[in-house]
Length: 384
Image (cartoon, rainbow, N blue to C red; front, side, top):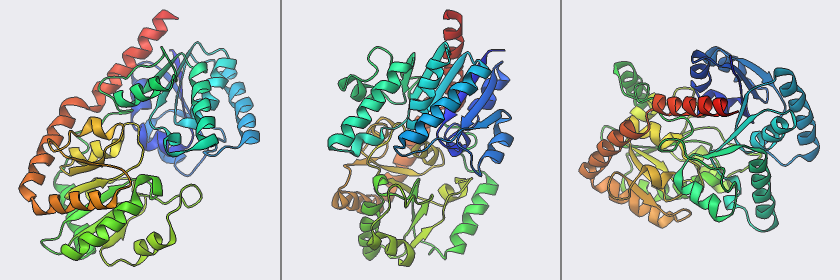
């Protein structure tokens, strides 16, 4: 059996972003080992993927001493496992994982880029992070940007020249459209959620799913919804996800709005987001940066209309004014105008929702992407 090691910085990435992928590869003849930092999600991950997991401390910040320790530890682990393929995902796992694999003599070293955290950085920090991206790519045999726009952007910066390939239509894991669909149980759960928060019969739910941080556009979304609430007081904004106060905290005024606004509901991280999406009319996703985001695929598959920022990945899912709406980043007024237009045109909103659902089913089915990745693995194994 060929040995495959999948590495992410934190276990939740394996659990959620790459859900099902490791189990699929195991079922198709691979001996799969997962590596990430330790965490409370590991027990669920082991049950879900049915593959071994080895904890290695990987931080999401710049921590040179800890990173060196992690590199040494991971190199020793890989020398012991002797994998045929190491495939990394997320920035720090990519940097440490690719160099550990190269030092350990792993023949096939693959790295997926799902997002570029340094897009919003400036000055010296931006240059440092671009350099880190380049040295990660140097250690890899191949780099998989998960969108075509991202590939072009990276090429313009001479990152991973000649090594990049987009798998399928893009995305890191595709979408299980059977799972992300509305059945009777999901519909009943959605009804209970709306009752729980006393949603008015004619009120709409605007939903955001993701980290509750500034670079997801939460400040602009909160400010826009505050104004929308004056026009449509029965509507609610639901936020599903966890904050990261140590990495990218919101300003105090926005934190107060989260805590005190009568029509804003914070649900925290949810393992199953389907009832929340089923209860919602529109996904409002004004993120500053993405690779190829899973959340719009999930929401669109569940029947939500998509209002996304006009950035890499998002603008490959939605064609503006054809199957959804795109707005510039960091522009509260344009976001608000789009929300008002959506609210005033329910027939168009439903049309957009139906179109994007069909598009997602036709182009981003999860098992199709898994088979493309499996073929990529098999081809590279033959050529070693």
